Image (cartoon, rainbow over all chains, first blue to last red; front, side, top):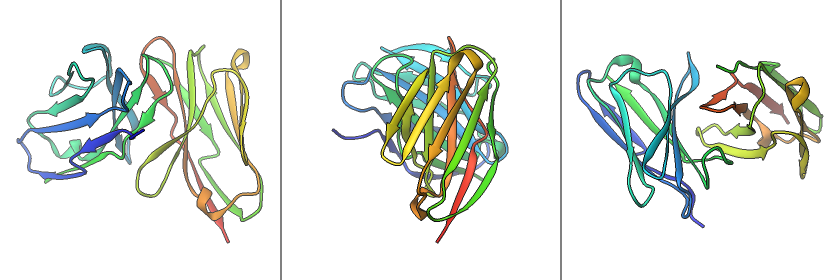
Length: 112
Length: 107
């Protein structure tokens, strides 16, 4: 069974731009969670989607948004990028909400 | 929210040595997982262990939910065990990660 895939793997943007990251969960998994990892703040929860509905949201500004499609694929969007948004963005999927999470390889975003 | 503390922050071992990593959490949890992050950033799921003991090869984990801690044991360490080990817990809401233990295994 294929693992969690994330695209793109690397991305360079400039301040003020917006970006969309994509995550395809393991086949059959209906829950997708997103995390931001930075050297200073560590791993922080962004949001979780289950069956196209946002279940939980972390403490991030409204510039960070996400959605989940009927095939469980998920996207997250960051608008008006700031230098501090440079990070590794990780997506994880699980069969059910709150279940064992399996992570994708991440998207490394650099904001210049 | 739930606070997660991992210790030690850094650990250097000689190949073949054993180690114990600890994770303390501040409230009751529904979900506790241990992960290994390799040098390329990939998080590998090691254990899903909200309570009890599990073993997988040279690795084992124990969670004592009533005392709010979990332990990850690595026996006969190998250089490929190097990386950062994270404990993550979830109560009713989001999953919280500890700051991790950076393990370096020297040949």
